[in-house]
Length: 409
Image (cartoon, rainbow, N blue to C red; front, side, top):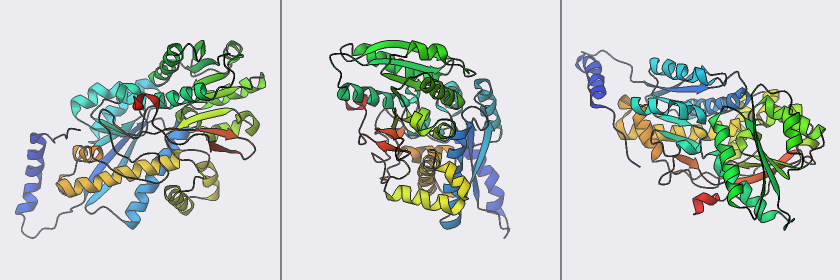
């Protein structure tokens, strides 16, 4: 992947600012370079439970580094802007971060899509958690894991390989929140895959509802005969959908990506009985609590070190702690390599972005090495499926990590 250069004018300005310290007679200047990493996310709105957990996991990793193995000459500062899941606030957040002089930013997938033309023109790199199909070709973005569309591909392939009712075909429907490109893209993946495999599926259609929805009666009636309902949404609407569907007798399988089921598992466990979570199958790029590997052991060790028992209960019901920890590992590794490449005094977002694109880390518990492949900008690329089991009150892997169908073509 091509490397980016800090504009020559900016370098000249840096040299001019630094010149007095070079010429000074014995005066001692601070040599610590502050790197500002801006998070434009929903910290108090519909998606906030998953976002805040991830933010805490990332901060915990930075704390561990600061206390045990600091980066010489570098201080990483996190800046936040709360979008409250309101798309109109996203450009305001970008302007706010740009005004603070941040070096690199992060945002939700649909928000990076919204901001793409601006940060590409401004040459401000983004490093985020999740992705979306429309952004995988963006050279100014890197993400921890791939788009949910690939998780959905893996789920649909699994259905066709494991459905034992043929020649009767499984009936598939989709329910998502309206007006969010992240969910619209997932619907397109389900619909296009099902219609492209008419011998394997019957398509019951799709439904989009406002994020303020409180009653799912129409949707549940429409899909009452579905064998599989793909749900793409965040926060409280997901809880009410599952509650009402089970109460109305829908006992078949809900499916969808980790961004639906894993990220908001804490809310689901608080609002839905374990029995009603049975027959939920999620796709994921990540490990899960209880997996036996050195990565999850480290995450657990520091979660216990940094958090109270009550906080741990919440942490163990979500993906945020280990996703934030993993994102921190990649980010800090890139910063260290960038410092070696350009020196701490010259470190900036572009240098970090260049280092991110050259990441190559093998971490136990993940399905592939964290290394970008040609044409893609995300590190975790392999997907596995997990199913909730109420008898053990936990998620259980039902497949191994594997590249999704379109990445095997």
